[in-house]
Length: 553
Ligand SMILES: Nc1nc2c(ncn2[C@@H]2O[C@@H]3COP(=O)(O)O[C@H]4[C@@H](O)[C@H](n5cnc6c(=O)[nH]c(N)nc65)O[C@@H]4COP(=O)(O)O[C@H]3[C@H]2O)c(=O)[nH]1
Image (cartoon, rainbow, N blue to C red; front, side, top):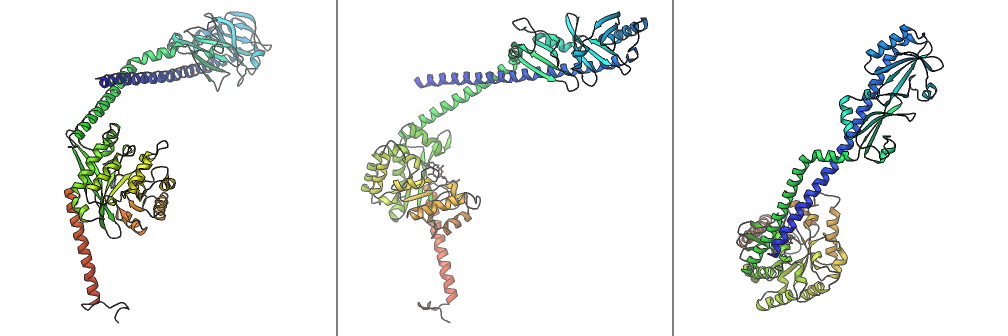
């Protein structure tokens, strides 16, 4: 009950964390989207502004004939007509050589033109600055184009013209767009959103607030700057919520469900494991994989590999349930059952051939107490088996402990009693030589990953050679694991590796199949031996083979 509550609470937590992560991701995407949108507005504002300025320059150029002309009715009317026809330029003016505007579409004037200041911001013969003249309470852009015959014509473009009305409207809802001229002056194109606390809209001052994007013009001395107020991201996020929220909920629910199913499955796996072990391991079977002596091709022993035939889930791999059995204190009774059953099933081989051995896999828990030592001592006392017929296999991981000397003591005691100790999956740990020197192991089982390098990985294969060399120098028995091809078997044989196991020779199998396999193997070895002696007979005729000293001429 306690555990179930814990699982439910953890599931809720997983759901919440997953949904929050999805929301956080949605928010991050909204931030990105907001930045992109603001940059898009800046780009759009710049493109619109450039188009307007280009158009305005062309319109100003069309009035070239008025440069240097007196400000009479014709000039004024021409300027008026042009401003009336122009979609962008609100006012035209004629500038004299001193830079003063002496004529506009409203008649004669005497407006000192900031032409000197403008000169600093000239590009391709066009002058630009911000005029003090306000159009709809906003300062506008003045463009002056000098004419070849002297003087210049200027035009005043209202800020509203620099962006499409829909963009202005949209921008106005969340921020502020302006054209920032190289002389430092600014024309506000669209004004909205939250203003700077001091009431100003100056884009440079508010760069620390909200999102600010600026795009420079390659043709004109200005850049478009768009600033979205700080609430813009939140608004984008809110707009995205109808899509993000269901996704977050779905992700939370799916991960929660997955977690719940996985945990309850694990729990039910634990329960059925416990149940089966309590019923004398009724759902467990043992498969035996032959170990072959490479020189003679004979089977000298087997490795016992446990199988769990789950009543409803089918065959479960040992890698999956052994860790569960370990965590739940079930591995010791399970191994006890395995040893007892294996010795029972392999009785003909074990009692019939004192050299035949069975390999038993041990887990870390077996090395924490001395129970195994007692169990095995009793086993050999009650049977006529030799301890050397039982090979106890364990990996470096399971035996090594920095804090506890018990595993080493257990190993030493087992070894002293004559049991064979094999280091399983050798080479996958990190201890190598130091490990082998410390532990009383007689057999080294080379991990499958190294055998796999034969014929496939010339770079890593020297590691296999080094492991084999190490085992040989330490006069240990070597078993190569996972031999799958004849090339691998031939290579290992040539290297002097004495034993091997793997799918090339035989897969793990139930005892009935093993008995049949062993019979077949014996039969084929007998036939091979007979074939050899037939060859010898054919070679030397029916006469008795020559005694030592040589072949008869
Ligand atoms: N790809 C390939 N695989 C091959 C080949 N030859 C053998 N194998 C597989 O390699 C594994 C060898 O066992 P292991 O290294 O001791 O690795 C064993 C062992 O660590 C553990 N295990 C199995 N039975 C027991 C047991 O009774 N007790 C404990 N504590 N662990 C066990 O589970 C692991 C996996 O066992 P299995 O699934 O039976 O997998 C077995 C075997 O079926 C080959 O040529 N190619």
